[in-house]
Image (cartoon, rainbow, N blue to C red):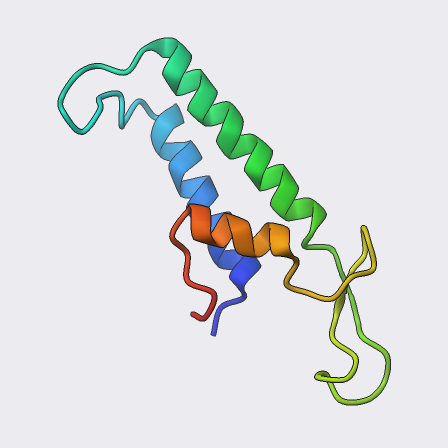
Length: 98
């Protein structure tokens, strides 16, 4: 099973690469996307990828069962996966289980 963080990162990177490569320059209805729309989409994707990275830095849990001592996010010390990461998974249609 691939880690949720890896799958979200891959999805974000794929969308960024697609937009930067000039694809998806049209809306589903066929109308052209403006440069501003593309830039806004890229900006949002980059921001979401940075948010993911912030909540991906994992420190190992203390000795014992993983269910009792789950890995924690280094940036805030909270257990994984963080609500931020789960929200990104939902936003980009990446299932929690892989």
